[in-house]
Length: 67
Image 1 (cartoon, rainbow, N blue to C red):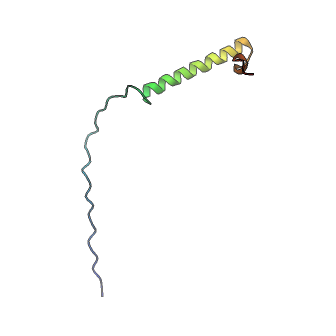
Image 2: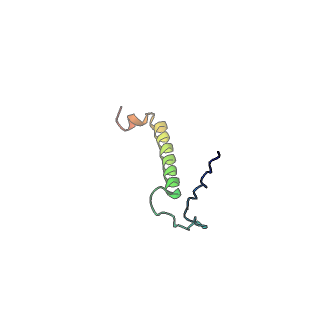
Image 3: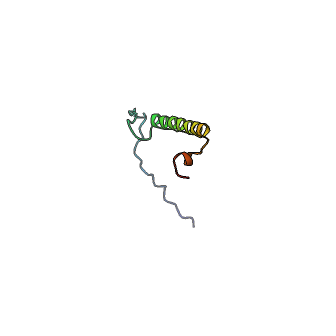
C-alpha cells in the first residue's frame, strides 16, 4: 500500500524591492571620507615621529620623558 504525500507548503514571502534607495552620505561616523582622513593623519604622525627620532637622536618614549 502506497501512502500519498501532502503537497509542499508554499511559504509566502514579501516582495523584494527592485531598486536600491539613494541614501545621502553620512555626515559623521565611519564613512569613506573619515577613514581616508584618519589614515592620512596617521601617516603624517608616523613620519613626524620618525623625523623627531632622527633629529634628536632619542626614541619617542625618551622624547616624551617616559623612559
